Amino acid sequence: MRRMRILAVLTALVMIGVCFSIKLIIVRNEDKDRTIKVGFVYDGDESAPYTNNFIKAQHKVEEYDFDGKVTVVAKSNISEEKSDYAITELINEGCDIIITNSYGYQESAKRFAKNFPKVQFCEATGDNANDDTVSNYHTFMGEIYQGRYVSGIVAGMKLKELIGDGVIEKEQAKIGYVAAFPYAEVISGYTAFILGVRSIVPTATMDVRYTDTWTSYTIEKACAEQFIEDGCVIISQHSDTIGPAVACEEAAEKGKVVYHVGYNQSMIDVAPTTTLVSSRIDWSNYILTAVKAVLNDEPIEKNMKANINGNDAGAGFEQGWVQILDINSLIAADGTENAVKDAVKKFKKNQIMVFKGDYTGVDPVDPSDTIDLKKGYVENENASAPSFHYILDGVVNIIE
Image 1: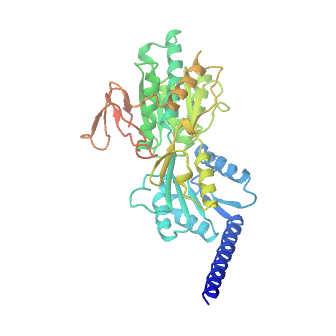
Image 2: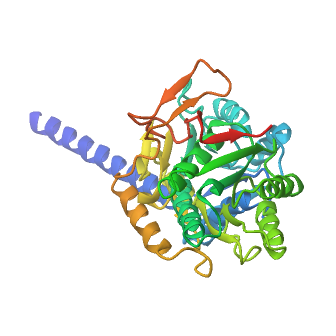
Image 3: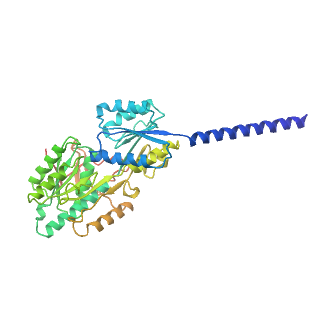
């Protein structure tokens, strides 16, 4: 009788093991057959350099060898007011991960994340992922201040060459910056740029004009033209069109001494005699990794090679998230390419602290909020979205 009981128990254990093995096989087969759909919401289209960088990342997803398990759908030229409509469409189309590319979408994206917990939402340039955390809502951005600073080195070397050749005096080392909005993202960027310039030409100053729009070719070009008229010899931008580059090229054709530093794309093709260099964020590093994680049903941040803070991810040169685009060797100062390589190498080794020096600054919204940079300010220390928001005294001049 006892032997019969033992046999019964062993038989039961074997059956449990068989059932468990069958379950594992089924789960593995389900994982093997898993397919996902990726949705993108864009504030512009391919004609806008900023949006085009995301479209390039989208193409990398489409071209990656996912063995037919990943499909993509995108909504372009979506205003902030219509973001709810676009996101709803993507959810109804069965998207498993939705990537939104504009700061103005972040409130909508997070709200939808709360209501649709099975869909992953990834918001570029957002700063609200870790405020009332929602597990399926994420933010990400490249540490673009690094690219701005290196671009500033390129501009500074050109200024130094112009001064050395007697083309301009030291007092004429003046920069004009076409800026979209007085956000921390923009202020951080142009501050990093002028500090890069001043690492080469310590007397350089910068005028800034806000366009209050991201994508107005006419306004951006007009701002650049006014800077040129005011005597600025370098024009840079944190805006999304080629307007400033075209303004520089047209002015040079009329005999003006002016050069341009771009953003988001190489602008040498539209301004071959004036554009020195551009920088950009390569969004594909984050997006491809996020898509792979969702396909494998794994946490996004766990798979990300980046600086992770909760549900937020960011990185710079060290992970290829930030890039310096073509240097225009026809007009760049001698030694520029080596200077760029050296600076990028130092960033990768964490040997450059951009926001440091004998500078003070004021918050333009709250004059009682000031900063002294003698000890330095660590940008992107706790988030991928830029946070430096001070106007440097005696260096940056905001033109109303």
